[in-house]
Length: 162
Image (cartoon, rainbow, N blue to C red):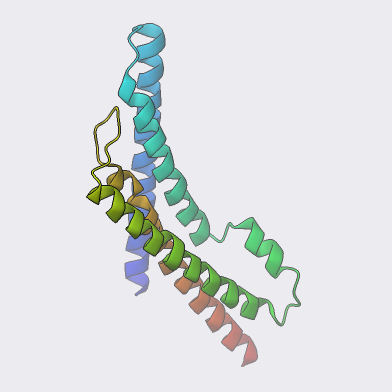
């Protein structure tokens, strides 16, 4: 299982790197085309927006994996040391519920609705459902990370009791 999670982490990292590289190339081309070639590309601004959405949600998944969520840490630190692992487990379950219900289920319904209604982006001409696909994908990723965190907190709590 640990091997699977390591490979999974690497895939997420590589996807984020590729998306960020594409975003940088796209914005550089946009600036080059507008100010040097004097022929702005209509599609570059739209692509940059879509890539920013994907980069932001994948970045949120990576931040969640690295336990870099300031709000949860601040909340947990308000409790006594004996209760911190239990509170962290509860926070992980709440995060799992949010990721499953809002991001995964809600995102799936949004993707399905936009694909069924054939909504296309104006400049790129791609179906908007593919842009919104990052919502359920990031929900699944965050669910996996939340369950992993809850399990590790549970193991830490059991080791402290022994």
